[in-house]
Length: 144
Image (cartoon, rainbow, N blue to C red; front, side, top):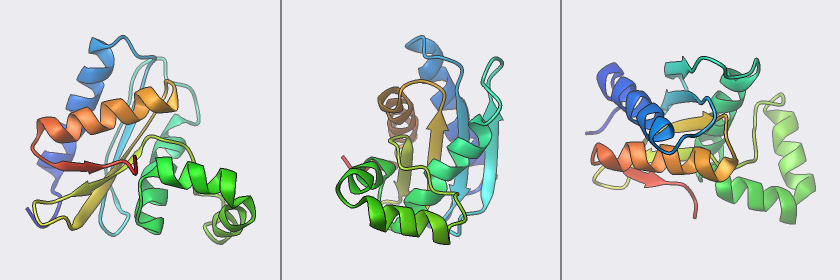
């Protein structure tokens, strides 16, 4: 697979939500973006709070924009706050430096998109993303 299509994006979303229900996560919001950062799928569970769509998109978009999972971006924000602050300024505040933004790689290791999840703790968000991707045979790059 060299690109992400709607069917795959919807399956990622459904699988991530299923994992969330299985582990009794708080209501989740899942965003799937293609390699160009364009939104393919966005689902917000009942009970998810107001800004969750923007946060999910920001986690995925940040991973694509910086070429690494948002867990590494969060670490950068702690170690190099001025740099991440400057990047977020360039990104007009769209960058969310917290785990839950996971790059999607194909069998050759090329980035074909990203998934961003929010709603529970960042670790749970990331777990749902990774599990969803792996269940479809895709490589999850969370930056762990």
